[in-house]
Image (cartoon, rainbow, N blue to C red):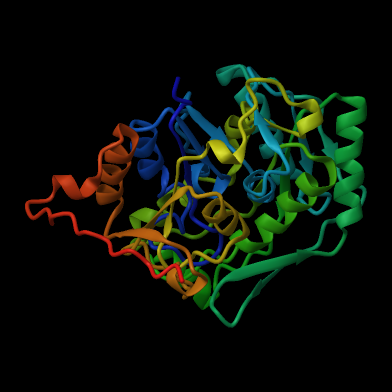
Length: 355
């Protein structure tokens, strides 16, 4: 019996991807890929859309550090019926903005039926700082990581939280050129790199699903806003998609705690990634396990790391539309060359000299 056909969809965070570099603009890709596979594994950067989201029953919401450990074979993914989600609010969030986010959490309980625990406010401001690398990628730091870890530990131990949503106060830089370019459809998400640092810290320390939503004051109206950036302009919160994603995010398990339903990296059939962003840990691990790598050329990024310079054999395609065709033929066990009008004949191999 064949195992479920499993695809991993990756768009690395904070590298200015032309598709997936904004809040939720890779969701149409994920929805389409989910229709041609049995299981889709993707990370929050692909599946989050600020106040917008789209639940897909065959899609696993896996935080980036957890995806790296899964790809290496260290952790398996255990599907769940429902997680108890604990909420952490940064002490730096202003009282009115804090109340707004608590109302969002209550709304998610009342309208979506999500199971949330009582919340925690960090014992010190997290002090998020935003940075950018020479490559153009965004990253960031938090000044008080210990405060975040203490709040997480309390939620796990006292509230029995099974997944953690974090809302940190991010700097309001509405006048910067980086943000203006991003809102107009070019450049890099200035928040994404710091968000990844926050969630990675919790997943690494506690081996529990986690995702982050920034707290920001609403931006001034902009009549020239790019449609890809519009999801982030709907209001003061990015929290709804995070709560929805975490509510059914798979748990991370080791081989000692696994069962017959646990998903492991060797079960991944194909990985879809931007063609210039192939240097990440997860992709390198999947490539070493002989998963089919599909590299998307038109999803340009600020990175310049194609698969070939890393010795990775990949199927290069122009678009996600073309990638869908490759996935369909791969799942069917059909050589995609057979769908082209010019099929070359077989060639006879010569015997090697064994002397």
